[in-house]
Length: 394
Image 1 (cartoon, rainbow, N blue to C red):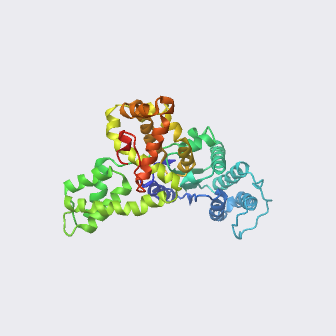
Image 2 (cartoon, one colour):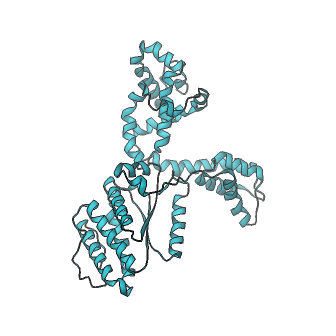
Image 3 (cartoon, rainbow, N blue to C red):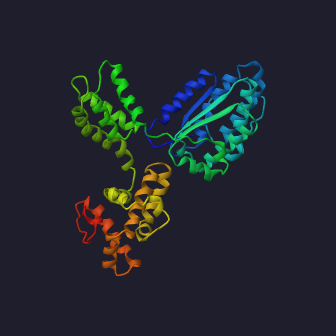
């Protein structure tokens, strides 16, 4: 199960796995889990194609006929159309109880048995696993566990956002033993340099080492950002080699492109209240340097839910379900939330809150007003009067 944030190349890796398995003569089922749609709706039609191919193997016809009966029952139970099946099916439908945790294991066992009878293998590749409902994820884990216990030639590769490991563990505790969870993230400096330089060289041009260093430094090796800065630097440069000046000029257009697409799409899906909350966290990010100087990690404060943490719980809790679907990156939410909470125990902000509120128990009220003021500043409402660094922007 490939895990990582968006834009690090998980889908590219999944496509490469598909190519490798096809070269090994696997029957490949590649799916992208759509948000808000049941697993049965896109899995059943895809499995139909695999079973029709397996049915052409003479010694597997009877076993495949039973698998197609299971597919028909599964499709009927979940009201999914799979079209006409061109081979005779003598077995009565199975996998038709309507309970995915019962029916999906029965269906995948039948598919695995058909593949075994045909001396073949099936690879199930699922992208965007975090979009699966808890019920469907649980059913899929149970099904894969059963096929693994039977030693059937059916394997799954998945890709999803970092929270998938936790979601799988919550769905079924043995998921941690069923999957490996390699992390896909930023490239090393050397790999990032190669990712930019090699396409340039392939086009008969070159890029200065200093320009490469600048791109790697700005993007921190994040693959999608490397693509954006590489593309815009290429478009701006009017001669070879691409220079630092070209990269600097490209930064504005690359950032604008990210704001209009990569970030905007996610931000626009949030409620106005959630947008205000994220704006406030963005302002709090300005103190990351002083936070590091305090030599206190976010994990140190993770268990100390001070007044700010308690006061912002409603907005954070609203974001938590969306975090699971990755409208917001959960790790970033928790990291900045912990940094915000830590202000209460690190000096001037705590003292100012104490001064205004009188007691630490009620410090949350001026702190809350101050956080609200940060969001208000974005709407032109500058009304914060609390004498603390948090109010600097307002």
